[in-house]
Structure formats: C-alpha cells, structure tokens
Length: 363
Image (cartoon, rainbow, N blue to C red; front, side, top):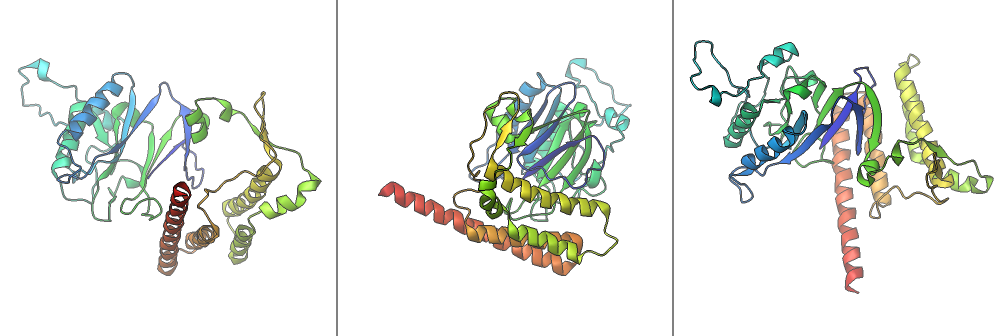
C-alpha cells in the first residue's frame, strides 16, 4: 500500500490519505509510476522486467520533468550507491559515452549521498535496480529523507527492503518526508505501507471519483440539504451509535489537562458522524448547476460488508485509538490481535458473498 500526502510543510497532524490525493500545483505535472516486479527466480519472473521498466521510464521522462516510481521492486540493494562515482584522476576519453551525473544536486538539497539501510543483503534484482538509477539519474528515497533518513527501515516481513520510492532529482526537492508505516495485515500479507509527503504551493483536493470521471465537478463545494422533520427517525438511525460511545469513552479516559489538538480531533470525529448521517438522510447538492443527489440513503459499504464486519471494524478502531493514547506493548498486542480478527472477518464475508453470487448465476 502507498499513501501520498502533499502538504505545505505545516504541522497538520496525522493525515491518512486513502483513495485521495491532495495535489498542489508545482510548475509541471507529476507522474507516479506504480511498480510490481515478481520475485527473482520464480515462475513469474522475467529477465526483461527491468529493461521494460527502464524503457517505460525513458518515455515518460522525455515528456515530464517530475517522475517517481514506487512499489515492490523485489530487489535488495543493501546500502550500495545508486549513482556513478567519478574520480578526478580518471580521464574520460570518449565524451559521447559520458552520462550527465546529477549526484552533486543532492548536496544542494541537503540530502545525503550515502543512504541508510537496515537490509545488508543485495540480490540480482537489487543490482538491476541500482543500474536503473545510475543510468537515468534516479535516486532512492528510502533511507535519505524525513523519518527514514536515519534508518532505512525494513519493508517486507521485517527482514528486507524490497519496496522503494525512487525519484528524478528534479522532484526530490519537493519531498519533505518519507515514512515506512507499521505493518498492517489489512493492506498486505507481508509488506509495510510507504508514505511520502511532498510540498508545494497551491492546494487542490482530488479524490478517486474525480480522477475516474475526468471531470472537475468534485472541486465544487458540497452542501447538505435542509433539515426535514419527517426524516428525524431516519437521521437518528443513520448515526453510528457505537462510534459515538467509543468517542465518549475516549473523552472519559482523558485527564483534565487534555491537549487542545486531541480534543479538537475528538470533536471533529463526532461532528463527522452526524454529518455522514445527514448526507445519507437528506442528500447533498453541489453548486454551479451540478446534478443533485436524490433523497435516499447513500450506500457507503460494500454488499458483502455485513454486521460482523462492522462490529470487527468498530472493535479494531476502538483498540487502535486506545493504543494511540496509551502506547504500551500490551495494548499493541491487543490491537494487532483485533486487526487480524478484522481481516479474517472480512475474508470470510467476501468468500461467502462470492459463493452467494455464484449460486445466483447458476440458477
């Protein structure tokens, strides 16, 4: 899993971007390429994988200044250099073979040339990845920027680094943070999510719906329709009561000297619960002649997301908040256990739904 957060460098608290990209205008488009290369020496591996990746990168880099590749490269690079070292005592006899070396720009950006890495192993695909970087002035972000600058944290099974963010040097100056998030079974069986933060100037929030429709309608403000007394019961039933109780429980556990930001977060979360019910009950409109939503409940969950899934989700969220407030090892283990149970419940519901749909198709 990859989360992308573009901010202006201010402390905005913990921002989780899921199915949403906060885009800020720079001076050109940014191209993110999501990469998956099957493990080396498996039935799915290919000797041409990195060659094909390089061809694709060259095509995009000829048209765009800012390009970044992210994902599972299945290459272990240890802490080897991803750039060519040119010694002063070496003479370049054939200038046509000389490739422009932009490693000096790392010094200008206050980014260390030598990156950190807790993975001490290098494999064949790792060498191919390093060659890709050296030949195209790409640089590995892991172990160089932000929270990972001093570590180079492991990304797979807590034993290796195979998930990377690599970037053209022109885009590196906009990186303000790179973070390897804690492993979560909800997103992957073995990989830890990567989070990158870019900084720029102008903000424009674009969600997946806008990206998929290719329209600008999502940029227009949303208004909840007026209160309707005939729908009071529907509004009340639409409120997630268990989430309300969980938030109240959080408030009761907090001491009198509660941090202002924490209180604001709890209040905002509670307001969101009421707003969600209002949207589903009364509907919403968008300005500037947009088509209005019909006055019927908005179905937020998938068909297979049943009561057991909702209960498991609420329990997981509750224990996750508890661990956030009191970060003890006991609370971490309890949270991890609920996370696994939540994932197990989701898988069970999905399988049951698929069987149900298959049965309908055969009758």
